Image 1: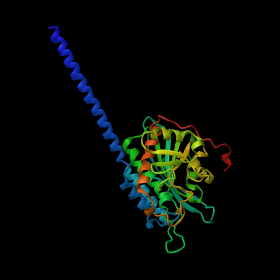
Image 2 (image 1 turned 90 degrees about the vertical axis):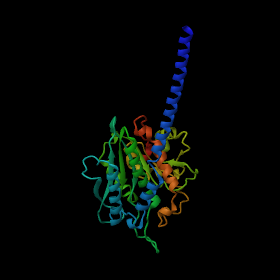
Image 3 (image 1 turned 180 degrees about the vertical axis):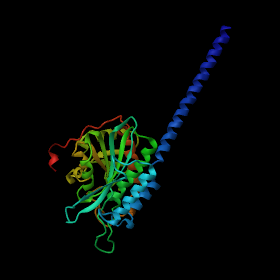
Image 4 (image 1 turned 120 degrees about the horizontal axis):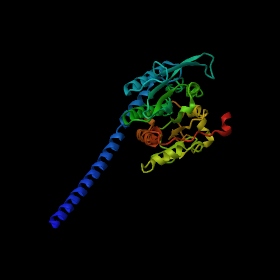
Length: 336
């Protein structure tokens, strides 16, 4: 009787172990499937569609206050609506419309930031903003090609904003995310400055700005660089989250260009928000920067797609409230 009892116990143990192994295998398999499923949320075909649309001749160079940027604004609005984003604050539409006078010019310009919101769950009163500027230099170039298409600068960044909006809509977010396409960046950070004047900066835990993410960096493939890396621990959080992915983030190697203060992240950083810009472009040797040659065909779709995927993975713990970057340090640079 005892032998039979012991045998039954042993048999039950073996079955239990096999079941546990099967459960573990199933869990691992399902985890891999989930990872693969998430990866497909950001695909190169969607990236190419956004980029080629925003950088097309039809957009006429997207200069603030022109019919061209109006076409781009409508495209971004339609994408926000398709994705299912809500409007910001008390705005009735995705547009934050305002008037301003450019530094060079006497006539007032009417333009708009395009802002969509994805409300958070457990930390909906804490905000993360993902941004890029959708304006460029217009169609007043010299020669046969007069259109400054601004594919890299910054249709690539806006493409990232749209792709990330769709991504986080599907995977979820604990903190509220604002997706912003700013106007007037080329005229002096006009749109982001206007936006900053109307917010409570203490509620914004991070700013993720995308600028010129369409070319292979000087560090090589599967890399990007971050402006103002030393000004908060934002970059270190991203690096931690990217461990094991094969993608690396480096500090801005072009500190003499003062890039931290030359993109829209600066408008929020001046308010204390740990707001930084991701880029891939070797700006010191980029022959297409602010030239009519900045066309979609000159960009690397793989670089753009992988960078957007890396931003999604790298910022995941911030979006979901597990990490909170330290407030940005400006020191004497506040005067700049």
